[in-house]
Image (cartoon, rainbow, N blue to C red; front, side, top):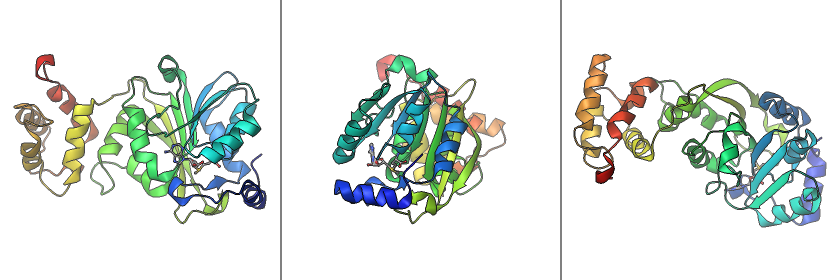
Length: 287
Ligand SMILES: C[S@@+](CC[C@H](N)C(=O)[O-])C[C@H]1O[C@@H](n2cnc3c(N)ncnc32)[C@H](O)[C@@H]1O
């Protein structure tokens, strides 16, 4: 069971630790959300689970209690010390002090990534760079249950033709299906965040599509000026992140699907963005 609101406040005071806003330190104090996270992720004994930002160890403790093995990365030195003191003796915990953006899977050996799951109450400021890191990895975990700022979850799940649709929606939805999740009230955290939260549930696709860093750069460049038309956006990146001729070839494919060069990036469906990948691959000697 997680600590209550007052018990969390008292423990932090005892540790002499003021929650750091810039590290998104809003600790879970609601047992139902902890249970729901484990239930959605279908965590069972023997599972390998990655956790980002274990904080005071609320989720970590619950994960370990199922018999799962946990790889966790925490940036805050003081909280890491506390975790080592309180959970360090439990079997199955691999705790890393570090930055999750640099270690998206918390040091989990690469060969275990495809069979692993992620369960995390993410620090909201790093959710997108961390997510892009996971999606650029050599192997994708099979399931993820992530506490996010509601707006971020909406962007990740956004559909083409909407304002929230962007590069990260394309990268994420190409690799994962978005299963039903949960809106989470501010009262579930100490201190209460001043934004709404959402528990996002991701299930790896049977055939996940992973974009190369080159294609990611082209797609990101297109969405940085999302009000512009694709024709002129692609001229801007052609010869840079996009090989010569690639723009014309992809625009031909878009035309065949009924989209003109005047189309704005947000109107293009994900399946057509995936076709860009084949055009972005350069012969090895020109990379
Ligand atoms: C929202 S709190 C979650 C704490 C805990 N898991 C819970 O649910 O109560 C986010 C945690 O991520 C940690 N954190 C912030 N930025 C980080 C980063 N770049 N890498 C790793 N951990 C980070 C914070 O120190 C904090 O412990």
